[in-house]
Image (cartoon, rainbow, N blue to C red; front, side):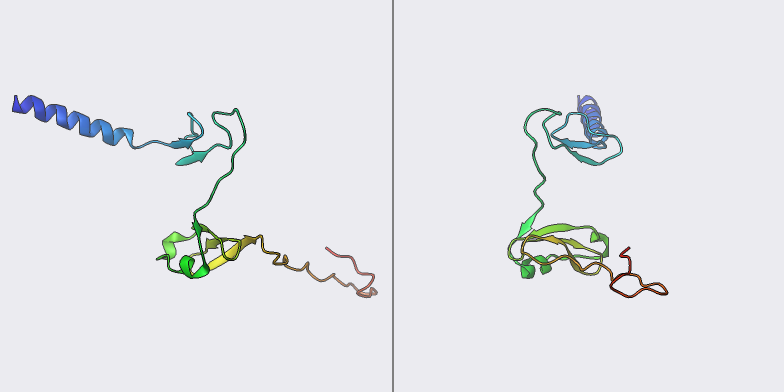
Length: 124
């Protein structure tokens, strides 16, 4: 009886471990094999579209309290206080985009070639 119980236990443990090597799908019952996680904007391709809500922190101080290392490159958070979506680049946090009216980066200056003045130069 002990041997029978041991065999069943081993089979169950192996079965659960083999089943854990798979893709995870949210909103899809058939996630792609190329992704570890696939998030669909609809439930199985039908119904209302949905968005992705990244983790939110209250302030930049809270964001900075996340114990990050170089392996956390690509970590995303939304900072409520600044209205910014931030990414960790492996050494520091950077704003990806903000909804607080922070102006975008200015365009590059025009390229001036021989015989042109800055007012007639073409912007690349």
